[in-house]
Length: 130
Image 1 (cartoon, rainbow, N blue to C red):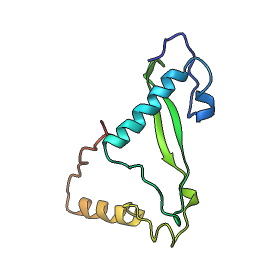
Image 2: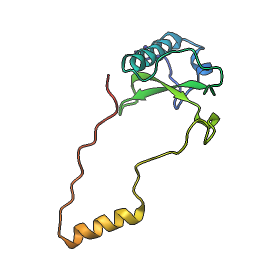
Image 3: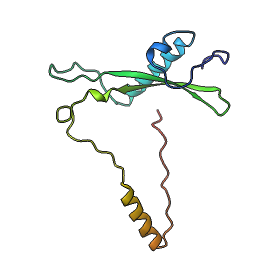
Image 4: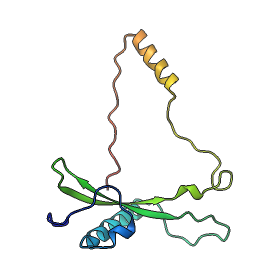
């Protein structure tokens, strides 16, 4: 963690802002940790692209995670792809997000109320830990 007397900008930061100033080595370590974690988990592998491939650009987003007192707990970097460069029918055929419609939620709640059932929420798994 960086020293407490160094001011850390709030919000998400791009590469240009993190390459300047005294926090640069801390952001570089956060970036390298993110890339190492993704390689270790098999999220991607580096390969030579086919000649007809549509290569998506990507960038790294930096965020300072703070506790309730505002002290920095962790400098985090996320590698993200710019998906807006994809073409439907070429790079993907369809998209799917398992999200129920409001009508389905209302139906399930109505059935549960009719049967005098008590609903419980399964425990949610926190973000990927590595």
